[in-house]
Amino acid sequence: MFLILNMASSMEKYASLEKDGQKYMTPTDFIRNFLGWFKEDNFNPESVKLLAGIIDTSKDGLISFPEFQAFEGQLREQEFKEVITHTTLHQQIEFDCDSDFVKLYFGKDRKRLIPYHEFSQFIHDFREEHAVQAFKRYDKTGTGFITPVGFNSIMMTIKHHLLTPQVKDNLVAVADGQNVSFPFFMAFNSLLNNMELIKRIYLQASNGSRTAEVTKEEFLQSAQMMSQITPLEVDILFKLSGLIQQTNRLVYADLQAMAPEQYMKQVTKKYTDIKAVESPDQRGALIQVLESVYRFSLGSVAGAVGATAVYPIDLVKTRMQNQRTGSFIGELMYKNSFDCFKKVVRFEGFSGLYRGLIPQLVGVAPEKAIKLTVNDLVRDKLTSKQGTIPIWAEVLAGGCAGGSQVVFTNPLEIVKIRLQVAGEIAGGRSISAIGVIKDLGFMGLYKGARACFLRDIPFSCIYFPVYAHSKQLLADENGYNAPYTLLVAGAIGGVPAASLTTPADVIKTRLQVAARAGQTTYTGVFDAARKIYSEEGMKAFWKGAPARVFRSSPQFGVTLLTYELLQRVFYVDFGGLRPAGSETSAPLSLTEAVKQENPAHVGGYRVAVPILEGLETKFGLAFPRHAPTPAPAAAS
Image 1 (cartoon, rainbow, N blue to C red):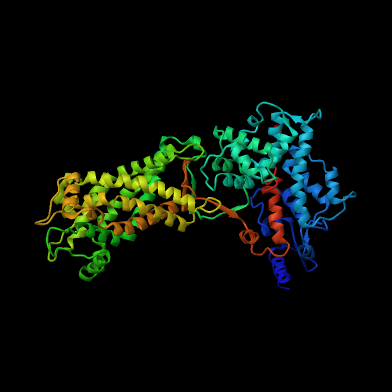
Image 2 (cartoon, rainbow, N blue to C red; image 1 turned 90 degrees about the vertical axis):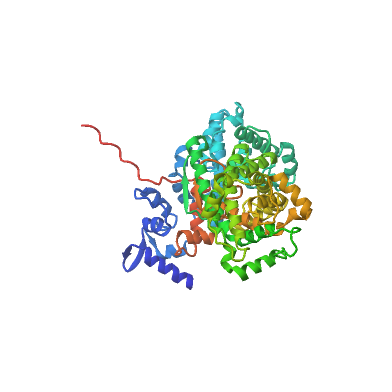
């Protein structure tokens, strides 16, 4: 009853004609207003009429409520013939509507009605039958072979909806200059139809890796359990891959380049979707500069977010590292990191946890931005066309990123550290960032720079490769990284990077903090290392290690999470590489499809929407969408 009321309401809303007290929908009402197709102002009325004719069983050009209510996707052979002959596909390569194939579905007299389930199967088989008929038309001598040009013509016409740009560009080349046999033709089409299965076979052969190179022999061995995939299809697959990527090995990116577009929805919502270039070939120097500026800007925001999130931990870490033992009895101010945290809050207030935050935010923006940008830039340059990058290149990219940031890091950290330890001296004079800069001078801002290099280069050499591989391990079966996996991967990368570089961080802190009266002074990295070891022992090099790990790990997790999410939602396509796992698509459910179109779709229309829409998107049976342009008047 609820369904009937909904349908009556929809009929009342969308029907524009009334005869003898009964409401009727016109073809325009049904196709354009109700289903939401052919919304263009210059739509083709003939196409609209043909599609509406599927529901108009009385063929009076109007849709009554009984017709509206009874619709279940049924089709007669005559209706099919009328619809098919008006498609752009039929106009290019004619389909024999009197063939045995049609009779098998509609009966010998072609009067059988087909419900929507059988209609879907019919359309599925129809495209294969049309391709076979086309092959026979090009094989005029009946040899079972057609020319590469004929093969290209059939694929571009009948199977164009299965072809990606990379496959289109190599249709003739894949034939190796020889005529195309019928088995090759069928295997090629079967391959394109089974690309999702091909991806699963690849992942099985590569043990789940999307960057591993798989040989033809390894792929064949993995495909042995899949009866749907034949050796000929595998031959064609590797031949296509070789043409596209100029290699005899297969990676997941090759399959992505060949796979037809599916019914999918984007998981990540984009607030911007800008194409700076139409293809990677158009990437000039200016575009690459703009891409770096784009990444730098997003990295600045991400760095500020990450630094603010963990700043109290950073302050505790700095004070623990600056705490000296062995020089004076009773000098120990903090028992451990937690004790330090409590005393800062007790004696300096909650705001004491954020001493030095402002200069940190001013400096962290360029620091993190240059680090992220340089790492991405070098990785892009060292990544192959197949999307793979060797481990040494990942380490090199991280090292370049770590080294480049020191120009910003050192001045930032020396000011931040002196502000952070200022609260330890009771009754001490208040100092500001400007005051510290004036006291140090320009050269003083780079005091401890060698230790900064010693810390930041190894840190990034460790962090970025670990992060990249953690992302890959945490990605789902489609290679997509959900936001929480980015956070976890970032945190995982920070653990070994922060802990293993703590000795360099301790030395840097000691060099940059102004020594108080009676405290040991240091002249350089090696002098500091020698004196710390002789006065305080090996354990002193690991002071503040827990706080450093607990700061760096979540900070970089938050920073990289923010950085990658910003690239997803504020998307600009510069034709370069995108962060791995940043995009995915999921099957669009029927309910979502209905909601996307019109909540008034009920009953059989829940089926009508994907079936009729699939005529174009899945089966390539497109109708002329625009009204024919009138011929120019003859000159008098």
